Length: 291
Image 1 (cartoon, rainbow, N blue to C red):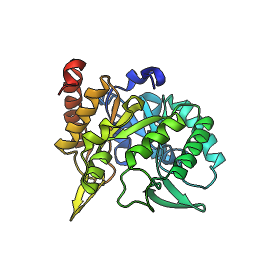
Image 2: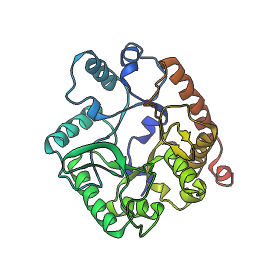
Image 3: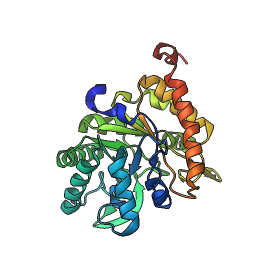
Image 4: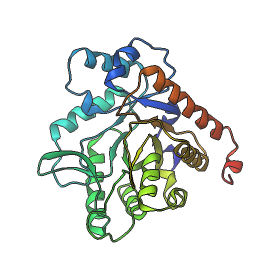
């Protein structure tokens, strides 16, 4: 996939933040916040009313926005919600987002939302099914679709391939972009005992349009993707490793969904990660490739 697959990408270069309810009023009143872009979940904005909705819409109309979905079960079997997809399409056009991302997982069964991002079995049939679903979803959206790799804590059934092969075959079969969650790779590497850099070296990095970065927490022998703590240095270093190999600026989203700090603390963490971002992209690509 050529870099030109995602036009307007340069507008979103840098480290952005997720638009979360505790900060809406402060961000709406502060146009000079220094954040290059916000990421929002359309499910949290479409159909809402009241002051939070007005503040969110004011920010989305003023600042660059990327959209990231939570509820579309790409790997599931439930039919799409046509009404929601129509609302989503209008929302994507309004925000002028260059793409829309969803998780490579399933989130519902028989019409019941499970409120969890669950892994798809790593089988050839699951690849065929998910590719067909992703292609159909892409045809219904007015912007390119990205799929995000998730954390998972157990495989569903007997795998016919590993996660890296599964993700690659879905991305290439569906001809969609990749939202590469660096923290998810790092957490899975800890839980399943593999080298995250060796794993990433196998992947189609030319399909990466955006990165996610977040914090996690260890519970005994298990590491959980909590989005509830500051990002640790090894995850930032892995982000830098990816950026060096991409050799181009892509938007990086700092996720914080639990134990959300006040806005000033979050802006400070964003600035720390932005400095790491700027540091690696200031190195000539030929040097970075050998780092």
